[in-house]
Amino acid sequence: MRLRNSLIILGVLEDQDIEWFVRVGQTTVLQEADILIEEGVHIESLWFVLEGALTVTTITDTTKKLATIYPGEIVGEVSFLDSRPPAVTLMAAERTKVLQISRTELKTKLHNDTGFASRFYRAIGVCLAQRLIHLTHTTLTVSTLGKVDSDAGVDDDSSIVDPDVLEAMSLASRRFEYLLERASKH
Image 1: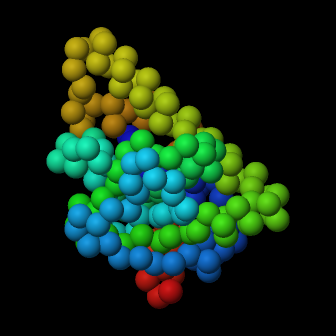
Image 2: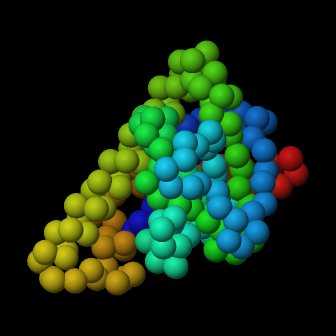
């Protein structure tokens, strides 16, 4: 079970935090092939993918798809931990709607609201831990079986997901629906 990273983040944050994202965020619509994040270029925002899909690729070969990012995922969160520019390019695979939170707004909120900061950084930590566990599990599967077990394999193995994260998923799904509904009106 590969969990969307914003669902992990929304499961750790509180309702007032989600309301803050909606209040300060800007809804942006990307058309197919529009670049959201460009490899090597510092980013100044955090985005929640609300609709559509983004393709993860490299600027040198945009035809090689490394991954796809779907609604319910968040991008740009690692920049708040690591100041290096991104190593990949994200471009709209189709018409895609995102909720954009400026880095300046987020940094101010993190500085002024220690409760929010604690929850936000914990959420990113849990998200990164899940990615690492998934990557480790995938690597072990590849080394043991000699191939990646398609969509039915590692992505469906809920045993690699923290039970506390699973418990928060229902609440996180409701929060994402609220975020989606409010951002559409915004």
